[in-house]
Image (cartoon, rainbow, N blue to C red):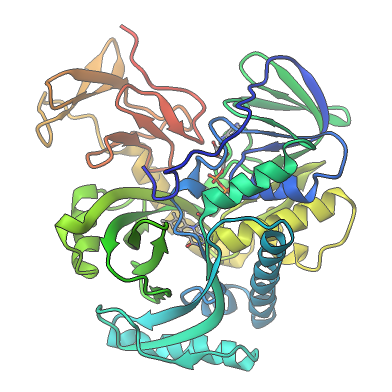
Length: 482
Ligand SMILES: Cc1cc2nc3c(=O)[nH]c(=O)nc-3n(C[C@H](O)[C@H](O)[C@H](O)COP(=O)(O)OP(=O)(O)OC[C@H]3O[C@@H](n4cnc5c(N)ncnc54)[C@H](O)[C@@H]3O)c2cc1C
């Protein structure tokens, strides 16, 4: 379910059916992978593969605000890195916005791209000072930030706004990118990479049946399954947020987000027939607090949404980094990665694709140094106990209950032939049995009773009630075979 996929992206639906050799293989066709392919489209032998369909990963459930006024990110970067890095990050976000504007304009992409003001507000009185610090940093960098009343009826103690920010429809944008690159780049959907091996000067990348040999590989698959060479599990955590789409009368044409955790954020979308408010809140580390029904109820209360106006509810996850900067660049040899966007992936995916495509073409990009994916600085070490605790907790729990009991009337955990199993009983009373272990790193799964999926609290793999993997990093299903 998503506000963006009312129309599916029209593609050739090509699936890999033989071994191939390419110069550059891009793994993942979300915003990161497709933008990288766009910048490399005139190079020879570029290939993109996706385990599912173009744009059907985290990008599908994004709220798609293209914004550099990102809560209090500059204060955080100054705290965990330094002021120069915060200034560079600000410049990189504005550079990314200029790049996406340029693509949409020169390629004439119809994606409901619109300039709207973006507000950041304090939802508690304690936050006013922190918000002012962020605003002062921006003013010092000659950004035009104005104090202005939030045009929405929710609790706000102070609010500031910038004007040169945008919104769009990411799936219409990816359709535009696909149309431009489809005859220059090989694109395979439903083609999952399950293993990567380094072999002399190149990489052998395997699907379940075929091999792709590549000189360069770009890992653009959000949370990677096949390689953990830079300690991603201890350098990041997963944040989950709850999104409600409701019909409204008026297109208010602005975006807003607060500075506190959990974030409250909202924007509007006019699809030509209806106007929708996209409201998001209750973001949390997936290793803690897991009560989906409660969190959706909170979003409804925060934004004063009427039950009769609500048309969709869904969750989404992103990778968070302790110093608030993404991981973008070369991992080792000719293997590149881009992830850890801290929920600002529209700007950071464009930025990543510019940096990585420049690196592949041996061009220096002025922003590449601050995002080095192999970094492991002091700020990471400070956050380490918190990250380790949350990952261990997810690995150990929820424990397998000894007592046979229907939790929430529809979930039961059992042990059979030494295996931990979980049962979901649907409304018709049909029992769906799965293995209760994520094939990625073995964490126990949690049932999401709103979207009816088994979710991994450690690294965000998701499975449907019959155990089919619908989101990585897991590449395997958990279906129980009797
Ligand atoms: C609730 C929420 C709201 C957000 N709102 C905003 C916003 O307003 N503005 C903003 O800037 N950012 C926002 N973000 C962040 C942004 O949506 C993401 O950072 C961004 O979409 C990530 O894009 P991606 O291409 O890196 O990953 P994805 O879109 O997940 O793409 C990865 C692709 O890789 C494929 N894949 C995975 N494993 C394999 C494999 N083994 N083999 C082949 N393919 C594979 C997947 O199928 C998928 O299509 C938000 C995030 C969240 C959680």
